[in-house]
Length: 419
Image 1 (spheres, rainbow, N blue to C red):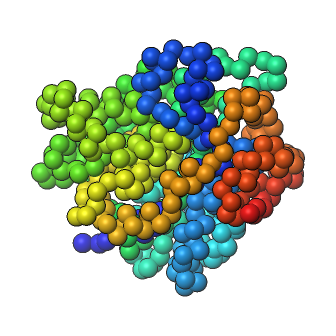
Image 2 (cartoon, one colour; image 1 turned 90 degrees about the vertical axis):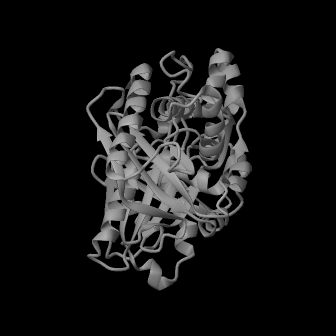
């Protein structure tokens, strides 16, 4: 059987964060309701950060670890996002250039709400399995940015996004896909996918979101169950309660995942409440740890949950992980693979948690100022000089060389590495 999966993986979640409990209190939200989100922090994109900087900063350590010969075997770069800033030009071209990759390379972008990262992963997996270019690798960059925009002097929030604001994050997950799956080996052919047209959430214009929260929750639950049932049809002997040592869910916020897991355990395992809670803590919680600190990064969130699972699980012996991805509108997929101690060690070398600790925590006053500045980065910005002095503590937070947006000149984006 062909071997394929994630050779290397890294997460980059920006330079600044917000304590979401403080945010909820600042906004005067119902704290009893807020606690159900199971959120701790969220990454906030600064004016000099965009989907390209997040993607390249995630990918750079992976690329730097390759030999020149290995680097030249990257034959495809896929950016997976709903935060694109051009209707035609793919941001994969920027990422490809900034990472110094071979020009004999396919460069393109995928969009399907929060499903895009797994769509890119599966496309990369099938390229490797096809063996049309034996030894070829694919760089998958799932990257998304939330920018809540308000006019200066206007209402800070509307009821429509008062509870979306604490969960909307920014960040990227970079995955190198090859026939050397050191981090996560895909179970080839073990996929269940399920999709249909539903108007749960959408972006009717480049910089606005609309949707029906209740409908989105119902669609997520429906897809989770039916994608898994299709997986079960294709995988002989699959059992939701016993087959998977860990489960990584697309995580808009932890409370949604807890509800989905409870629904699955009730219907498929006939488990009792106490057993469901214990199972949630054992199999699901490891995948929430990074997500609770970054927020919903849309197309990258399922991959973020997988990275968190591998980072925080117990892999003394190989463990099977079930992964569920959902994208509004909608499309979903349940698939699985194996992770081992070697993969955990490789992922831990990326020091994801340590870099999350280094982010600069914004005050509420700084955050509100940032919201007023967000319209400077609206879709279609033609010319912009990025303000390097805006909250400089954030810009210097990580210490190591970090890519930032320098300026936009006649729509073309220019970047710089800053120590």
